[in-house]
Length: 161
Length: 161
Image (tube, rainbow over all chains, first blue to last red; front, side, top):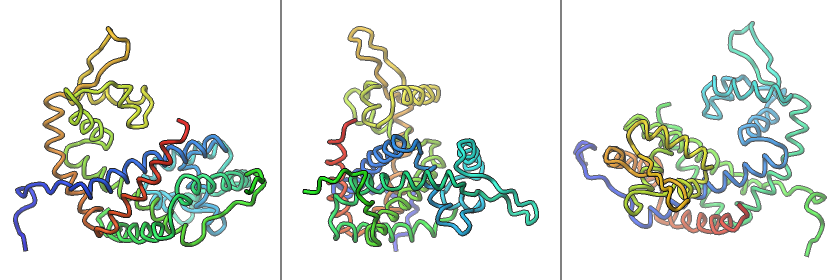
């Protein structure tokens, strides 16, 4: 076992093979996000976080989730999500349901207008995800991508928060 | 050829196989970004865009790039990058070199302090990229990730800006 302290070991720079995968991932991420965000915005005036919030609520029991729980899932701070939800509330997409009795904080609730907006946006969003990503890849590439993201996610979920 | 207008065709929702790859990618992206951003911030107080700007400048001839060109590369608007550069300038990481003569706009130039900061940050950044991503994957997974990102990027680069 190598017990040299990390700080005194020379950095292990990425080799060409590793750099190709890393830069490819980084560039794809930036361009793909931009493309999908543009389509969502042009179609229904939604941002990606708007879409994520609406999708999470529509999948949840009674179409509601506690703000603190949704913030955890989105990896956002509670205050950032709370500001975001206020803006979605002003557009009639969600409401808040205070829950003073149990002290565990407010619920965010999907409105009928929020549900209708999600239903209007979803077909074009999935078409964009297909056009710019899924339909470009082979079955094998999709499977290996699923495997490798599982590996990385299992590792990342073990990291201290 | 199917010439039904897109709007009247039923949406082709993702199947389980496709959904696994797509959600895996999206979740990995969110968690990995967060982990790497935390390490950069804790180590040298840099954000990911700071690191991208410093890396781009250090790779460029004479350690300078036109603001408009760097904005294109980063997929940022010129005004967003200009604000960002102002804050980096206040921290002594970069300077601006106006270039009134040719009308093509200002250069951003790496300072010695910017270069020293990048040199101090790079070893820990590459260690974090290895620990949370590259070293978790097999040679085959890295190769296939490189192939698939090439395919997606070639497609995205052909899209209208």
